[in-house]
Amino acid sequence: MNPIKSILFATDLSEKCRPAFEFAASMATRYQATIILLHVTEKIPGYVESRLKGLFGEEEFEKIAKDHEKSMQEKLIAKKTSDNFIRTALEQFCLKSGIDDASCNFTSREVVIRNGEVVDEIIRQSKNYACDLIILGGRKGRLNTTPIGSVIKETLRRSKIPVLVVPPGK
View (cartoon, rainbow, N blue to C red):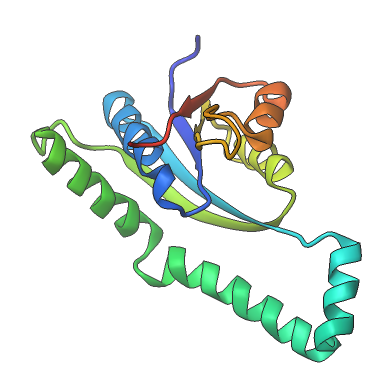
């Protein structure tokens, strides 16, 4: 396996992704790797979009869509610059884990927000940033307990680099 220099961490911003982020931060620290944090907002299917436009009117629908996109950007970017956001989260991780400051260091590159099909964007951004590893957070299934959903299955199928799935916390 090639050395890990760049890690793509894809997140839906939910609490269930915290263990995956902590693992990504740990891996980045261990290998002095770069983390690219990716959030993808899925496009609404055409038939749903046309129904919503009919229900709300085109102008109101566009306003709602823009507000949602702005909200996602604010969640990730407006808090802090991406480097500081990741570095602060890493410092908290290191503090909780009892890792000394000298050992707790990596280079973060940026937070990436895209609108589109989730798996397409994960694969596209992993290539764009020449990532060596993709880290995804698992989830509890509704009808069963498998942490493997359709996004994870498709990413595993299509990725040319290792994909690591971290199960959700308790």
